Length: 348
Image (tube, rainbow, N blue to C red; front, side, top):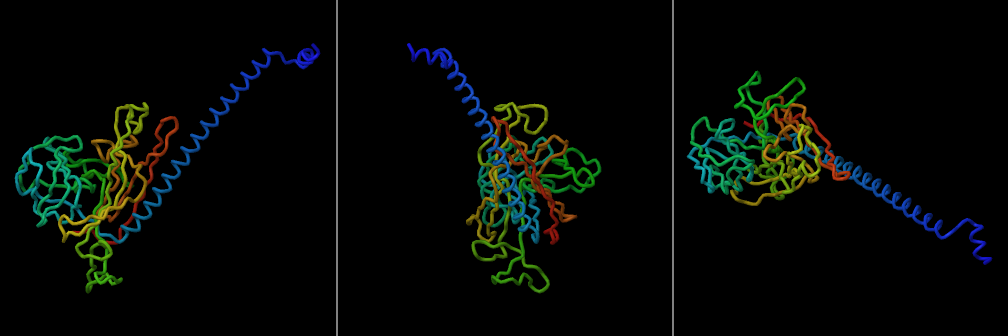
């Protein structure tokens, strides 16, 4: 009886102990939930910081790579009819400055526009091989040859000649430049180029008064070497419907975005079908809208190509929209960009 009395005098009954234990558990669980939320937030912030840091280092590397480069303008002319069922080869006048793999645009700005992926360049420099028809949500079409039928590498975005109210079928996008809108063609997902090289392996980049252009293929400087930096999807996608989040702020949640990486590819045009050096340059966190690469990603009314090359001003505008870790499945997107001046003239 004395022991029971002592417990009562201390104010602890069985009911009180139960209530106290329950409250303790509730407080503990609440604290753990708060800690978990703070941990997720911290991880998300750190993840985004890492992505931004890696992106800035990647841009610095690209700036260093392109500073002395000569930018190519991959455009060819269709020389033979391409039927809608053809998946073997596409014949043009010259494939010289096209990357060994990529995407082509035919009959751009018309009802027959088609994006065609290719996996190789044929011997002789006049054919694209391994065709995948109707990519980027287009449909396979029959294309007739002719002087007006350009075969354009989809990667490069460049301003068109007519900048004062051009017809809608003359451009693919409108970018906001320092002095106003810039109408351009292409998707802006890549850039093809050469750099000064010394075939002897030294630092003498001149042959008389002419710069020697090429690329280092393997460990050897080659006058027939070429390079490209291009956006390559990883196969992962992010859907706005999954999180009900309007990633590009366009007023809906139905868009789908591909996640990819910038990769540098180097090859030797003297060896058709030869090896291609392929190196990732940064995080696999770059966003591009599915079926609409180079589209407006921040709803400012202007398209956002990754690469926009202005050959007149010799400037490259590089703009990346990067996806970081998310808080409670809400995507975090940051924009990183740079504008750089190239010391060399455009490749002709």
